[in-house]
Image (cartoon, rainbow, N blue to C red):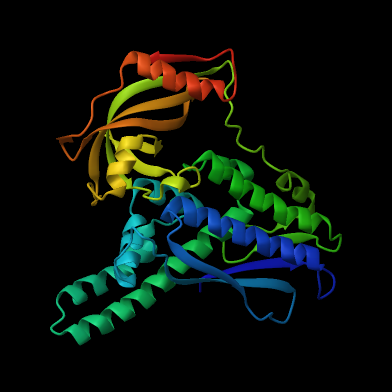
Length: 351
């Protein structure tokens, strides 16, 4: 149904406007954060309000996927872009996030429903038949992805905070999801008539009012600054890129995604100026599971990796394109990174 159903238990058939708006805003923020994290912000989404139903006050929001966003880097048609997005649900990161939030693997939700269209399109006898099948496939893909996003966003609003904090996503996304939940419960606290909130169709019990304050606690905003327990480690890595971000200025919001040679998930930004220049000249193009060898700097806090920056792309699909930065160059680069936040207490290791 692609609906986010929020049921407010109240003695009368109304709630405050502030509580209603806060919960809708929270759902929209969760939806946007998931779109950025799972689909690189490629989905053209809209959250709309459904007509109210009789009975207890219910806020029924509907997720509408209107298609895929197009940029200068995406020249393919709508069907091709949406099929790529559906395939993106099969990445390791997307599988883990959706499974944690919905209890289902993405393939169970979307890929199988759309996969049949892909085979039929490839076997189409005429251009007209192919176009008709692509239109039907696009419509079906939008419905299926909307269902994934509505289920995941609903879970964000109801999930215990510790579950959100354990999701395998960036610190920024954890903050956005947790802060969205806090915004909704702040609005509920402000309306004394609301005794409980239930996100319907999620197999979760109603959340009683005495739990509102805990869920309304605003999370700490991610702090990019370094402290004495942090260090940078530089290494050479072979990465399989599963989801590149070809919008250079948007890297802080949407990191590149990939996996290492031992199948470990990788989130990173690319800071190699020469590589970006060549990419803008379209000397390189990314296909499914493109392999790159990189010189990467990883920031560790208390022994845990927190941030990775690709300083130099050395190989692209087996082709040598650059030499590693020498030790003096690395010290200069990492020194600049540290001086942006601290003058002391910074260390880094070269491997």
